[in-house]
Image (cartoon, rainbow, N blue to C red):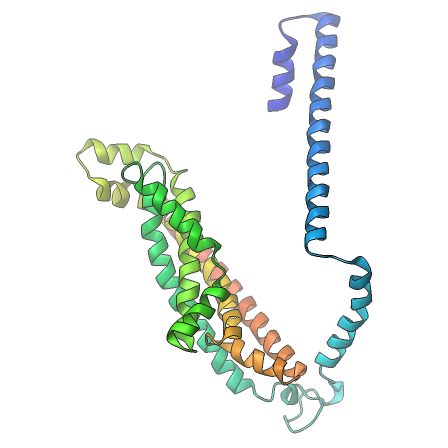
Length: 305
């Protein structure tokens, strides 16, 4: 509708055939501009793709030749299940219990990953919640402090959590502490940036009302901003928890606790069926948590609104 209104306005107050001709001319010019825009955008995209492929030394022939090796790896990783023995004991080869022979141990490590994700989300979410108000352009106190905090959030967000976990493993030793700290820092940057942008789109009239009655900055945040953003923060925090569960499994690769350490051991010992079983359990866990958090989000947002 906006584009059509622009074309009608461009045609001017003319009437009859002259107005139709002016409209058609403007429509043709408008379509030509859009085709030029998409053409240049497509050319830039293809150039960027070709440049990235060159820098990454992408070889299509090598990629195609590697597909059979991938299929061979999957064949080695997939367990040899016997449909007639699926429900048999774990001593019977071909049963699900034989494939998931170490499920109590793996389940315990999965629970450790969940605990790491919950703690990291709580720590990072709390820091992000506080810093996001300072980083927001329409709420942040002063002129330079919001700029500094935004740069800090960008820095934390760009740090790969697995690299940070490796640094913390060297500092604090292997274990869950390194993983929790690494995930919490990344959560602070990502969630803080997201929430600061949410703050910048809230209705400013309640904040102006709090200021009008003599409220300070903390009163403005507490009574003007927080009631508007709490449903969004709760929803994004739950979404971040799902991401952090996957991250908790990944940082174990460098010795930062959780199920990832067992996955590394399985791969290093060429027990690819064990590795696939662990991956299946992680995917199932994330699927269950996704459904649960979705129900919680909808219930909470519906109750608040």
